Length: 532
Ligand code: 4UV
Image 1 (cartoon, rainbow, N blue to C red):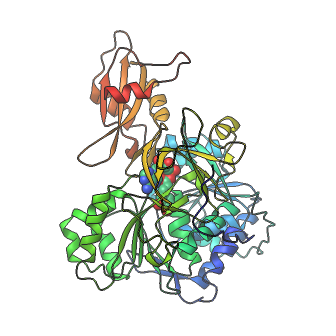
Image 2 (cartoon, helix red, strand yellow):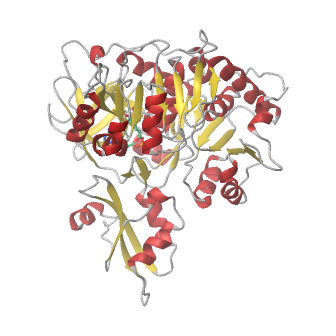
Image 3 (cartoon, rainbow, N blue to C red):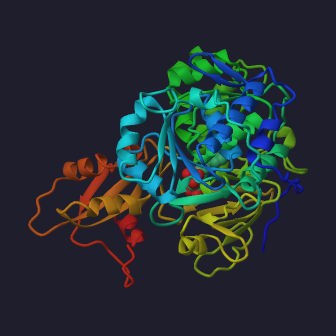
């Protein structure tokens, strides 16, 4: 039985992402749209619109056409949104690449997505060029300039004619982030203009917006869909100011909130942990904050409460620390905690351990995976979501699409949840393979494939093991040595570590005689979890 949202449906504008998002600041052309949190440099809403038009024109002049993929390998800077919206306005598809990826991982995404152009920054250029060698990428644009490469300045000063690309929001892709979904290797998640426009529109009734007075801190990466939709596009669509930081450094983060009077922070659990526990927090005035929303991994209820209690001390208005829930395949938000006066009738509060309420236009089911039946009221079940934010499918992978997205449009999340009588959902478990480390995806199948590339390893399986102290899930490898091979735990960790981004590090190794598998050859991860 479908569980309806507690909110009435919202209308989803039939617009492309740049049309919709950039309209938010159109009435305030001189107000800052983007600010570099480190230097204070800024781009106004008016400038943003002009730069986006120029980037789109320059890309079209290079021969890029609707549907062509442009990959972006950049940290958060105030220029990232210029590039994203420029690509989108040209009708192209932006595939964001994790800044921490090794050349090998970058090459995988470039090849799989069929990217024609890669946009990067000079500190990443060596890695980018090493990756590009193995791919059909035609051009590497270096935002801050490098010998022999076009720069962002070249693009935004281009005198190419403006482009008017005919975009069908419901059909045409705007972004192609990568996610392993419930099983297997990372896959391109096809998100349309309508998916992203919908997701920002759906979130709006849950926010008590202070028009012209919202400043969002963007420290979570724009290369992750949470950063792209919630921090960047939502912030700009509000007509607010998005203040960027290239990486998380607690002192910079706190100073930026204080100096730029940040009103909204969207973060992941490790940042809430720091806010609750680190002594440095008391040295800064964080009273401008209205809400801190945590997502991307489970947040401990007591920790959320502790962070809120600490930040409220001495502040006039009370910041709310709460959770949202999302998934790349959901553009990404399906649930979040509304501002206090945006709660549905009859609901007085959302428990801190809950991920909040289903957004408007979002239906949910909680399904017992063993029977396919809806769970009884109050019982746990796999969360299924249906709504306009659900992806179109995985790129070139009908099988994975069919396994995740059923014929009736339900996206099977692989997360287990319960819902209370107020419509507040709590995520209680995960039945998919995915491991989350500091909010980043770690796909066991990817780590296993890398390990199997070592001739001293006959077989391997990876699972996440909860570390009680940090609350993090740590990737642990079970390894079967090849006959006669001598291999230490360190060698296994170093072998994988040199080939994968730091968040995918194997943090524990156990040697075993045989990986437990089903008759069909599937790794029995449950058995390994029980053993760990
Ligand atoms: O695909 P992904 O990496 O996507 C995300 C998205 C998180 C967002 C996005 C917008 C929000 O407003 C927000 O609050 C959170 O992480 O990973 C998806 C998986 O991450 C786990 C869950 O297993 C998803 O399937 N996850 C995400 N949020 C939570 C969570 C949460 N609050 N509690 C527990 N697990």
